[in-house]
Amino acid sequence: MAKNMNNLLKQAQQMQQKMATLQKELEARELEVSAGGGMVKIKITGKQELLSIKIDKECVDPNDVSTLEELVLTAVNQAVKESQTMVSSAMSKVTGGLSIPGMF
Image (cartoon, rainbow, N blue to C red):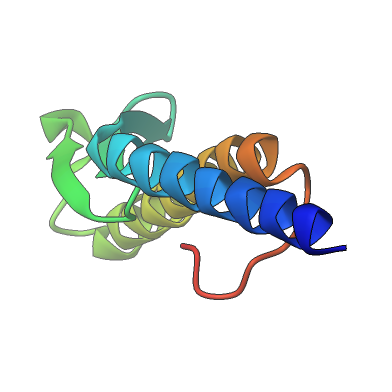
């Protein structure tokens, strides 16, 4: 019984180490997402930190600010969603689909 418990503890420690390593890798990964046919581009990390926002000058119309705002909002939301999906997918490979609270 104690041997099984030791093996289980060892496996948990190995998983924890793998998850910590993966977490650092994911924080450094970058995604680029665009909206409006590439008019607005967002660069984001696996930690959901925005690195840059690029806006094509052709979509900047002082008489139609709301369209630009909508494009930026759409691009940011899509970037965050794709970043979260990337992290979730990578973490589930390490945890075998086991949901661990507090991990990303």
